[in-house]
Structures are given as structure tokens and as C-alpha cells.
Image (tube, rainbow, N blue to C red; front, side, top):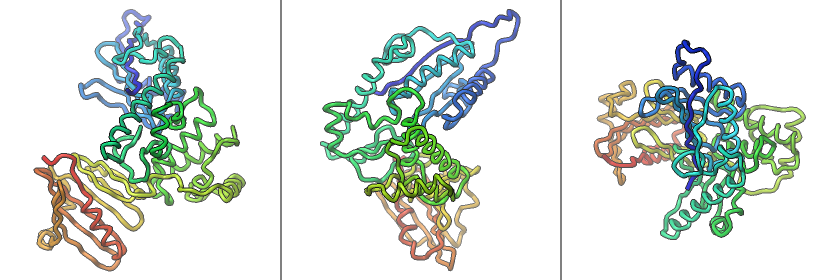
Length: 423
């Protein structure tokens, strides 16, 4: 029972009787500009596009643990808003409702009257009434229901559960339940099911307002799910680390009494090459911090969802990107993995030559995927080229590496390719 907003509104009529109506795209662009002006610090991403039904949409992400807020300009002068808030918490729910009301006042949107319902409006009632009391109740009920389902599945022998984690990456990390703020053990599941208030620590934004704890938890979400634990290779990685460092510094200067991740903060500053008084303070605190496993799911392996239903397991430290030709690439300074589905006959430049195909003497037959591969080992340049099939699906995978000792890693990466449903 997740908590979801499903709001509807319409533009107020223009004071100028004969002025042409504003088109949906300019209207959404004005909404985007409003969000940038008033909450640019919180914007994770902004995408202007279309819905599956062809309606112009504006998709926003306002928190690392949150899904998208989707604003759709429907027929005429109408707008709809959909968003799930239970992944982040009551503070986020109230913030988003208050923000949408403020945007509506600024841009002349009249919101439809709604009632607390699981099908529409705001199920907590807060958006329409301003009564914050039921928000906490709905969030805890949602958490209890999710934990209860995990407990039932664990009793049936299932494992590998995650709560409020974004689609696309499945982390291989010990724990009964992975969350954006770190793993939880089996005892935690039982305790929270008996009393959901014991699970408040799993919500990144519980109390209302943008304060030090909210910034700290925002940084912790990034440390657990997004940061790659090495010096940045890409501009996006460098921007991410700088954002984490900025959030931690802002939170610490506002409230130095909170439990800061000193060791991980020190690592991030080291990757960025940041020195000075603050770095010395963080270093001193890190040397005094208690032990235990460090934060960061991407310190280990990660299962990545690829186009057309494919999946692959790679080290979490690899930087991922999609090229213009549709090729997915994951790499660091000495290894790379390239993948492209062949349904559209693409990837001609990556296709193995006739001689390479003749040399494909390695075979793999998994539960859903089979393949043939060639392995070329030359000083400073080793490459495994594989053609893979799953039912009617075909794909090309190329694994390159500098060190011949990583041959087993390359073979394991190729053999980790899977397909969700063999067509």
C-alpha cells in the first residue's frame, strides 16, 4: 500500500478574452522554470517528453530515493500530477504537496477538490485539508505492509529483497532488506512489523522542512546507492561527489551533533582532491570513528538491467553510459564492458569479423542464455567477444581488459548475462 498522489487541475481562464490559449509545451516549460527558480537545489533531473498516450509531460525527480513526479498537460487546459511519496517519507509528502500548491498559485492552476482515496487525490488528505496528522499514519501502514510481505516471502525461502530502491540496479550486498539508507537485518523486519514506528529510521525525510537531518540523509542515500568508490572518471560522477560533499558540509555547519559518516566523507573528499581546514576536521573525526562495514552498495557487484530485457553483473565501481548508437558501456581505467541487443541489426562496428566468428571456440549454456565467444589475449589489450541468444533474442557483448590475470573476470561477466523472459 504505497502512498501516491494523483491530482488533477486546470488553468484559470485568461483575463484577456481574445488572447490565444497557451499551448501545453510552453505551459510545462513554465512549470519547469518555476521548479528551477524555487527548488533548483533539490532537482535531481528534469525531462520534458510525452506520456505513453501522447500527452506532453514534465518529469521531475526531487530526491535520490524518490520516483519521478509526473506532470501531464492533458486535453484542453487540464493538468494531472502523479507521484509516489512513501519511499521518502512524510516530510517529503508534505513538501511536495506544499510545493504543488505554491506552484498552482503562481501559475494559475485550480486544483480539483479531492477526498482521501487510494484511487485519486491525496490518500492522506493533506493536500486538500492541510491536516498533517494522517500522513505519518499512512506512511507507517505502508511500511508495515511492505515488511509483512518480505517476512512472508522469506518464510517461503526467498531472498534478495529491496525497499524503495530505484529500478535498474540490483545490488549484491548482505542483509535481509536493502534500503536507500542501508541494509536491514531479519530482527529489524520482525520489530518493525510488530511496531512500525521502530522503522522510522528507514525514511530519508521523516520530519517536515529542509534542515540538517534532511540534507544528511540525502547525502547518505547517495553514498549508499550512487557513489562509485574511486576517483571520478566522468563529469557526472564528479558532480555527484561534489553534491555529497556540499550536503554534508551544509548539514554539519547547521547541526554538528548528528551522526555523520566521517569515513565515507573523508573518502569522497580524497577522491575530489579537496584539502583545507574542513578536510582536516573530517580526517580527524574519521580516525576516531567506530569500525564496521563502510557505506556503499557499489563497493560490490551489481546486477544491471539492460535494454530488451537483458541483465548483466558487473563491479559496482564501473562507470555506466549509453552511447548514441544505443550501445551500453561500463568502464573504468583498465576494463570495459560493451553490450548491445541485435534485434534491430545494429552494432555493425562492434560485430566480430569473419575470422573472429571462426575463432569462437568458447561456449556457454545457461538456464536462459547461450552463447559463443572468442578470447584474444595480447600484451596490454585483451578482449572477449561474445554472441549471445535467449530464445529469439540476440545480443553482442564485448569485454576488454588490460591485465591477462583478469581473464576469469571477463569470462564470468559474459556468463552472467541473463534475460528476464526467453522469447
